[in-house]
Image (cartoon, rainbow, N blue to C red):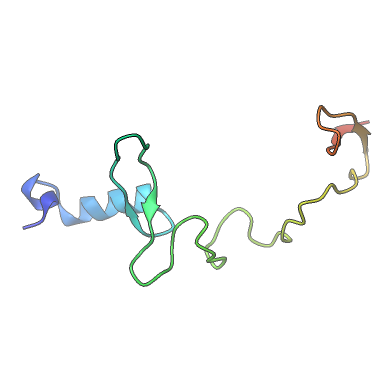
Length: 94
């Protein structure tokens, strides 16, 4: 008998909670003293989890070019404004 069953939770409820807490796969980790919880351990056999290197997962960034870690020119209709960081430019309307 699993811990969830001993606590009166259904298997479907446990799976729904796992999918909510770790939408990219894996298993929620317990809170460890001195460290916050909220992380997901990778699923067995590799795969899921943020930062796992699996770019086939659907997300808001699908179809966008890979980041180049550099400043790009401001789009048409905007002008470059000074930023607190010397290497960064802020594009503002105008």
